[in-house]
Image 1 (spheres, one colour):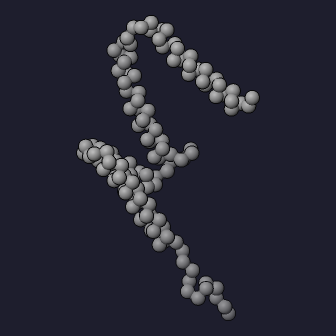
Image 2 (cartoon, rainbow, N blue to C red; image 1 turned 45 degrees about the vertical axis):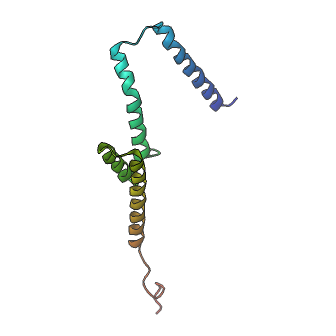
Image 3 (cartoon, helix red, strand yellow; image 1 turned 180 degrees about the vertical axis):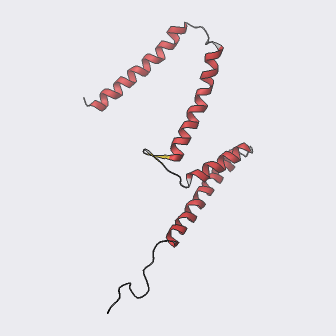
Amino acid sequence: MTAVWVTVGALAFATAALKLVGPLALGGRPLPPRAMSVVELLAASLLAALVVVETFGQGRSLVLDERVPGVAFAAIALRLRAPVVVVVLGTAAVAALWRLVSRRMAHAFQAKPPPGGGARRT
């Protein structure tokens, strides 16, 4: 077995063990209110972290590209309680327009060779 499969097996075993420990430790009792409030916040915080990492990260570097205005549009639209279809389509449109404009501007500012082939003949 390779090291990857050993890691996958260990993680699967650890996941199963953690799922088993919860019911055994609680014994059918409900979670305390303080613990329940933390558990309720976990899904939202994990989703927010995933969105931030996927929007601003690429490998180990920070990237600010067309995804940033798209997510900003989505945040504003959701804050204004826009329908989800409007949020998704608007986000895609903003990101696409931003990409189009930024690529055209980059192309416009590229160095152009001088007229006549660029080489001077003497």
